[in-house]
Image (cartoon, rainbow, N blue to C red; front, side):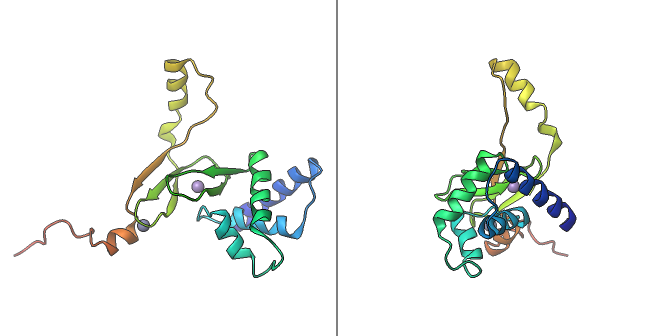
Length: 157
Ligand code: ZN
Ligand code: MN
Protein backbone atom coordinates (compact mmCIF):
# COMPACT_ATOMS: atom_id res chain seq x y z
CA UNK A 1 0.00 0.00 0.00
CA UNK A 2 2.86 2.37 0.81
CA UNK A 3 4.13 2.05 -2.77
CA UNK A 4 0.70 2.77 -4.18
CA UNK A 5 0.48 5.86 -1.98
CA UNK A 6 3.90 7.03 -3.21
CA UNK A 7 2.77 6.60 -6.82
CA UNK A 8 -0.42 8.58 -6.18
CA UNK A 9 1.61 11.23 -4.39
CA UNK A 10 4.11 11.53 -7.28
CA UNK A 11 1.26 11.76 -9.82
CA UNK A 12 -0.46 14.43 -7.71
CA UNK A 13 2.71 16.54 -7.48
CA UNK A 14 3.21 16.20 -11.26
CA UNK A 15 -0.37 17.42 -11.83
CA UNK A 16 0.23 20.45 -9.62
CA UNK A 17 3.56 21.27 -11.29
CA UNK A 18 1.98 20.97 -14.74
CA UNK A 19 -0.59 23.57 -13.64
CA UNK A 20 2.16 25.87 -12.37
CA UNK A 21 1.00 25.45 -8.76
CA UNK A 22 3.67 26.03 -6.12
CA UNK A 23 4.68 22.99 -4.05
CA UNK A 24 4.95 24.30 -0.49
CA UNK A 25 5.83 22.14 2.55
CA UNK A 26 2.31 22.69 3.94
CA UNK A 27 0.73 21.65 0.64
CA UNK A 28 2.91 18.53 0.56
CA UNK A 29 1.91 17.65 4.14
CA UNK A 30 -1.81 18.10 3.41
CA UNK A 31 -1.61 15.98 0.25
CA UNK A 32 0.35 13.22 2.01
CA UNK A 33 -2.09 13.25 4.93
CA UNK A 34 -5.10 13.02 2.61
CA UNK A 35 -3.62 10.17 0.56
CA UNK A 36 -2.74 8.16 3.70
CA UNK A 37 -5.98 8.86 5.59
CA UNK A 38 -8.85 6.37 5.61
CA UNK A 39 -10.80 8.49 8.13
CA UNK A 40 -12.48 10.97 5.72
CA UNK A 41 -11.31 13.90 7.83
CA UNK A 42 -12.84 17.36 8.16
CA UNK A 43 -10.66 20.43 7.54
CA UNK A 44 -10.41 20.87 11.32
CA UNK A 45 -9.19 17.27 11.74
CA UNK A 46 -6.50 17.80 9.08
CA UNK A 47 -5.50 21.06 10.75
CA UNK A 48 -5.30 19.42 14.19
CA UNK A 49 -3.14 16.58 12.84
CA UNK A 50 -0.66 18.88 11.04
CA UNK A 51 -0.57 21.92 13.34
CA UNK A 52 2.18 20.48 15.59
CA UNK A 53 4.51 20.31 12.54
CA UNK A 54 3.31 23.62 11.06
CA UNK A 55 2.62 26.03 13.93
CA UNK A 56 2.12 28.95 11.51
CA UNK A 57 -0.44 27.13 9.38
CA UNK A 58 -4.09 28.25 9.60
CA UNK A 59 -7.34 26.35 9.03
CA UNK A 60 -7.79 28.66 6.01
CA UNK A 61 -4.61 27.20 4.50
CA UNK A 62 -6.09 23.71 4.87
CA UNK A 63 -9.35 24.87 3.25
CA UNK A 64 -7.56 26.58 0.37
CA UNK A 65 -5.53 23.47 -0.34
CA UNK A 66 -8.62 21.26 -0.17
CA UNK A 67 -10.42 23.57 -2.64
CA UNK A 68 -7.43 23.39 -4.97
CA UNK A 69 -7.42 19.57 -4.82
CA UNK A 70 -11.20 19.49 -5.36
CA UNK A 71 -10.85 21.73 -8.44
CA UNK A 72 -8.29 19.27 -9.82
CA UNK A 73 -10.67 16.36 -9.18
CA UNK A 74 -8.27 14.78 -6.69
CA UNK A 75 -10.34 15.24 -3.54
CA UNK A 76 -14.07 14.78 -3.05
CA UNK A 77 -16.21 16.84 -0.74
CA UNK A 78 -18.59 14.71 1.33
CA UNK A 79 -21.80 16.00 2.86
CA UNK A 80 -23.20 13.09 4.82
CA UNK A 81 -25.82 14.77 6.96
CA UNK A 82 -23.75 16.04 9.87
CA UNK A 83 -22.63 19.64 10.21
CA UNK A 84 -19.00 19.40 9.11
CA UNK A 85 -17.87 18.68 5.55
CA UNK A 86 -15.62 15.63 5.21
CA UNK A 87 -12.96 15.14 2.54
CA UNK A 88 -11.84 12.03 0.70
CA UNK A 89 -8.85 11.64 -1.61
CA UNK A 90 -10.32 10.07 -4.75
CA UNK A 91 -8.01 7.05 -5.11
CA UNK A 92 -10.48 4.63 -6.72
CA UNK A 93 -14.28 4.50 -7.03
CA UNK A 94 -15.86 3.32 -3.80
CA UNK A 95 -18.88 3.75 -1.56
CA UNK A 96 -19.35 4.69 2.08
CA UNK A 97 -20.95 3.16 5.14
CA UNK A 98 -21.76 5.91 7.66
CA UNK A 99 -22.27 5.21 11.38
CA UNK A 100 -25.32 7.10 12.60
CA UNK A 101 -24.00 6.99 16.18
CA UNK A 102 -20.31 8.03 16.00
CA UNK A 103 -20.10 9.44 12.46
CA UNK A 104 -17.38 7.01 11.32
CA UNK A 105 -17.21 6.64 7.54
CA UNK A 106 -15.91 3.33 6.16
CA UNK A 107 -15.06 2.65 2.50
CA UNK A 108 -16.37 -0.32 0.60
CA UNK A 109 -16.18 -1.41 -3.03
CA UNK A 110 -19.17 -2.87 -4.82
CA UNK A 111 -19.12 -3.43 -8.56
CA UNK A 112 -22.84 -4.23 -8.73
CA UNK A 113 -23.68 -0.54 -8.98
CA UNK A 114 -21.88 0.02 -12.28
CA UNK A 115 -25.17 -0.32 -14.15
CA UNK A 116 -26.99 2.43 -12.27
CA UNK A 117 -25.66 5.29 -14.41
CA UNK A 118 -26.92 3.64 -17.62
CA UNK A 119 -30.30 2.98 -16.03
CA UNK A 120 -30.51 6.58 -14.78
CA UNK A 121 -29.48 7.95 -18.20
CA UNK A 122 -32.05 5.75 -19.92
CA UNK A 123 -34.89 6.67 -17.58
CA UNK A 124 -34.20 10.41 -17.29
CA UNK A 125 -32.37 11.39 -20.49
CA UNK A 126 -29.57 12.86 -18.34
CA UNK A 127 -25.96 12.85 -19.55
CA UNK A 128 -24.84 11.19 -16.30
CA UNK A 129 -21.43 12.18 -14.93
CA UNK A 130 -21.32 10.22 -11.68
CA UNK A 131 -23.10 8.85 -8.64
CA UNK A 132 -22.70 8.50 -4.89
CA UNK A 133 -23.91 5.83 -2.50
CA UNK A 134 -23.98 5.93 1.27
CA UNK A 135 -25.41 3.29 3.53
CA UNK A 136 -26.28 4.18 7.12
CA UNK A 137 -26.24 2.12 10.27
CA UNK A 138 -24.25 1.29 13.39
CA UNK A 139 -20.54 0.46 13.10
CA UNK A 140 -19.23 -2.67 14.91
CA UNK A 141 -17.85 -0.61 17.84
CA UNK A 142 -21.14 1.20 18.34
CA UNK A 143 -23.06 -2.08 18.11
CA UNK A 144 -20.90 -3.39 20.96
CA UNK A 145 -21.20 -0.14 22.95
CA UNK A 146 -24.95 -0.14 22.54
CA UNK A 147 -25.03 -3.88 23.31
CA UNK A 148 -26.82 -4.71 20.10
CA UNK A 149 -24.56 -7.63 19.13
CA UNK A 150 -26.35 -10.21 21.29
CA UNK A 151 -29.86 -9.60 20.12
CA UNK A 152 -30.37 -13.32 19.46
CA UNK A 153 -31.65 -15.14 22.53
CA UNK A 154 -28.99 -17.25 24.25
CA UNK A 155 -29.22 -20.95 23.57
CA UNK A 156 -30.24 -22.79 26.72
CA UNK A 157 -29.69 -26.47 27.22
ZN1 ZN B 1 -20.03 4.09 15.26
MN1 MN C 1 -13.91 7.04 1.03
